Structures are given as C-alpha cells and as structure tokens.
Image (cartoon, rainbow, N blue to C red; front, side, top):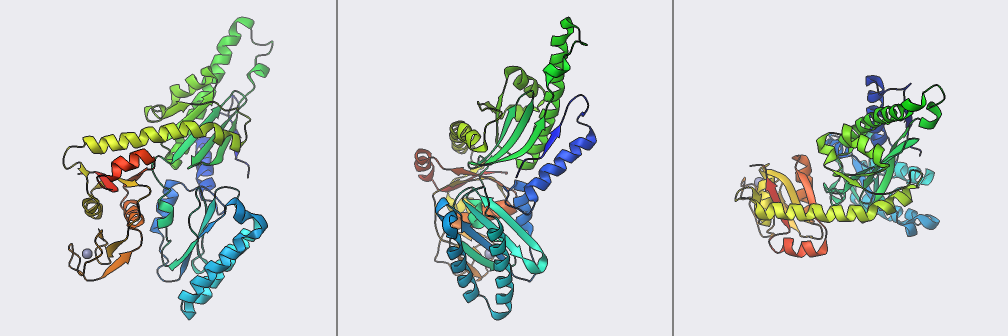
Length: 407
Ligand SMILES: [Zn+2]
C-alpha cells in the first residue's frame, strides 16, 4: 500500500487543520485493520481488551519465505485449528471455528507483505479483529481466552527496537517507521520545486534569500510532522538523510528531545524500502549496542534502592509497581509461578502458598520473562532487552532480569 502523501508549500501551509489531518492519518494508518506495524499505544490498547465472556482467539503464524511458497502456511494453520478445537468445549468450538475461518479468509485474500509472521486477535461475536505484522518469526501457537494473548509478542517490544527514518529533499520528503528491521513508509510529503519558483519575476540578487526562506518554511513543516509521527510511534532514534542545508533547517525546528536522537545516514530519496532498510541496518546496530551499554551502565552505577539486582527482587518490585524500566536478557527462558490472587510472579517452582497474599491459587507459568513483560506493559513500565551476546554474559552473571526503579 502506498503511503499517504500531502503537499506543503507556499500555497499549503501546515495549518491547524492540516496538522490534525496528519495526526489522524498517521493514527489511522497504524490502526487500520490490515497488516500493520504496531504502535506502542496500539499495543497498550490491545492489553486493555477484554471480551467479558465470549472467546477471543489469539493466533501466531510464521510467514517465513518457505511458508509463503505453495501456500505452506495453510497446513500450519490447520494444525493450529485442530489443537484449539480439541481443547475447546462444545459451546466454544463454534466461536473458535468462526474466528479461524475469518483468519483463513484474510490470509487467502492477501498474505501480509511485511514481516516474518502475523498475529491475529479475533472475536467475531464482539466485532474484534486485529492483524499485526511481526518483525520476527515467533513459534506458531493459538490461545483461546477473554483477553488477547500478547506474551509471545512482547519479546520483540524493547524500547530500542523502533526507529524513525526521515529522508529529506526539496522535491519530496519521506518518513518511515522500523521495528526490528521491518520497515514501513508512514508518510510522503511533496515539497516545492524551488527552481520553478525562482522565475524571472524574482530579481537575481534576491533569489538566494527566497530559496533559503522556502527551505526554512518546508523544514518547519517537516519537523512538525516528525514530532507528530514520533509521538505516535515512540521511536528511540531518528535516522536522518538529506542535504546539509535541509538537514540543518530541519534540526533547527525540532524539539531538543528529538534533536538528541538524530543520527545522520545516507539513502537516496528514491530508494526502495529494501534499500533503505539495508542502508539503515548498520547504523541501527551501532545505536542498539550503545543503548544496551548505557542501560548496563545505569544498572551498575545505580545507588542502592534505585535498581533491583536479583531476579526475584525484580519480580517483587514489578508486582509492587516500583519498576521504571525492566531489563531482560533476551535469551533467558525459565518457568515460574504466578499467584492468581495478587498476580505476583515467583522464580521458585516449589511453593504451596503465596508469600505475598497467602493465597493457594498458584499456577505454573511456562515463560517467566513473558509473564514479567506482560506485567511491565500493564503497569506502564518500559522494557529494554540485552541482545548482544557479549553483553548478555556480563549482565546475566548477576541476574537475567533486573530493573531500574521508580522509588
Ligand atoms: Zn498472592
């Protein structure tokens, strides 16, 4: 699908109306019911969803290149449907069958162009339909419940995993959002052709001044757009490609918050998404390493009480709502226990009563990290992953789950 485009020039200033239209467009683009990258706000909205009774089907399906040839995905989908229907009781089977039928129709119509997999959250009875492009291939699975099963997705949801890319030129400017390497064009802005405007009517000695003022106007509009898009997407970095004069003018109108996040890189304004992703990849890798290093330093240098150091201590702080940023070793997998009464999480498998509330309603958790991530999402804590193998070794020596605390 083509990115929406607007024109900003002397005849089309960035009026409040136009500004609102862009916000609405960007928001709609991230929430429309086709295959989209997920915005953080959208993820939080999913986490709040509860049907209050009817079954909601959560389905994760890998769509690797092998799965996309010869409709190989269909076999995997049938297997998932079979598993789900075996587990569901009679009343639920009808709902689940209808949900899966809907998913199959959507995939038959069109496979998502983006990503290495797709997630679906569907409840026909409540009119709920969400399809999301996944940047990494997560294991196939299906869950039936009253709330979306988001845990598998949360491992790809670190605060350093999203980047905004801005390509600026006088003729047109383009904005892209990336999530772990999956890249989508969000907006395209047509600028004005300055040469065409500097006709004989503008005296020769005024042409430089006029050209500079046109660039300034355009940069101001583009900066406002970058702010809007970033507010929706919450990117950790902006990669910027453009001529020195255009880039300088653009920076001049950005808030300090965004200026501090800019890293220059080079890509042609006419490049394809694949070419842009390839040009951005090495820069993103460097930024990710730096961000991981900074998180590790913040943990190491935190005064006592400002960071949790043990895994169980981290889980306790998370349960108490004290965590500001949860930091997880990306490769860590462990089972655990969750109290159904107070929702607290525990490392130990040998427990009969909850040490926090005394309840005996304890249930095993297959993946403690995913459960902790879900809790971080519910409590509006941010999440950072340590993915670099060398850093992981040093980090996990203390504990694979740590946190910077609010208090
Ligand atoms: Zn409890």
